[in-house]
Image 1 (cartoon, chains in turn red, blue):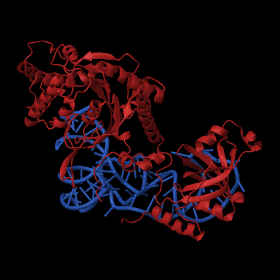
Image 2 (cartoon, helix red, strand yellow):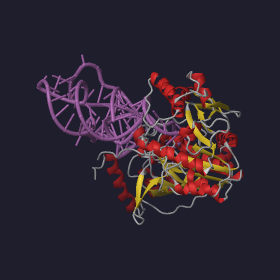
Image 3 (cartoon, chains in turn blue, yellow):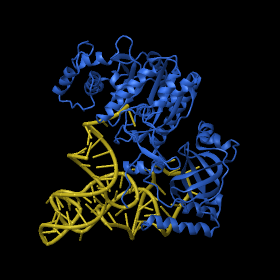
Image 4 (cartoon, rainbow, N blue to C red):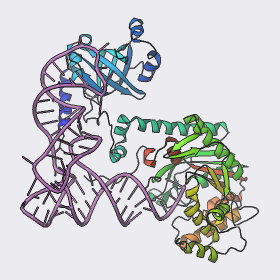
Length: 497
RNA sequence: GUCCUGUUAGCUCAGUCGGUAGAGCAUCUGACUUUUAAUCAGAGGGUCAGAGGUUCGAAUCCUCUACAGGACACCA
């Protein structure tokens, strides 16, 4: 164990002081009858004089000491609970010798319970005049500086609890996170979707393009992947007869960590029997705008230095049109060949990996390289090439494209949806194409899922499906720069001892 | 994985040209019964991320290592 700092030593010595007064340093249950929010809502409207004359009840609250100012035979402190802070006013003549000494020895960070009556100070701050002071838990480490809070980014992520204690914005972000997820649940239930849970341990890789985490089950002696998407299980439920299902859950991808990527993140996926890409567009727009309205109260949002207008009626843009306009090559042309497309991309300096074998691969590459960065306002980019969409239905008029869209806002993808491929014969061929890609070195390709094909062979109704990256949406709605700011405990390397 | 930047007291930060390590908050002692980032007086607290090198002398210059932040690459 590392040596204690001076401050830690002092705080440990105070354990003995408490025990000398028969006080348990890490105490017991404390029954409260109020909290900082209720107190402000109830009493803040009254003046100092009105409060002095009112017959108010004895308030009992508990929380952490955040500031403390001694004034000789009296003192002030702010104590914080989940809802905020309130000032307490402590007088020796009210508490008595012993309890007042306990107050004087209390440190910033200690958790206490008090009872007392409401009052306002000369300066007009609502305060509780303390009649009993109960030490509840000792803090053996000092709090960060009271004015600046915890600023060190690494410390904020590694010790999120300290970040939460001292930084209001952090608390607020996670409250909003919770509200966003709640709103999704409520709206989806309202629309008749049923929340379900499907396996996180997957024997077969599928449902998205990503590198997986691998694990092993001892009793079955068999390898598993942590799911990269719940998609294929949710669609089995549609085969089974549920007509609308959704899952909000953790998904795992074994890829680089960045401002936009955490190895585990939260996805919302839903499937609607008898729907399609078009119905998913309407649903996506309705969901996100309603969530934003309910949680933020507006559809005009600011992200960084970008103004985003979420007003309904989002733009729709076919990927081939987008690339034709911004890059200047026409993938609608019937005679477009892979050789021509590849040469075009290579001339632009793009690298073409060996598993790129179709014009669709190039189209998507051009889109991601040159067009995505230009899209700021909410836009449904649709018509993704078949090569990169192994689970989406082919377009009826042009089989090179699928009925699939991605929602792009501020150059980032927030959602991915399509008319679900329900033809088992076609699906099998798509998996076979994926396996070829895997053989050519695409580490993110889907694997053959015979059981899933068998499920489709029993007949799956035409359906629309949608996935939304919840963390990124929360980033957008809370103006958070990094995904680490919306995940309580982001992953980091071990600290050297 | 590559490049750039950062790491100084519990916290927030200074530290000039290479010349004895600084401030505020916090801590400790004393004063003060309506303070507001309380004030006043005094005190204690440092492996300058770690290792090596250059130098009479390194927080400062160089190299390596660790961790972090950012950009790129990859993806959602």
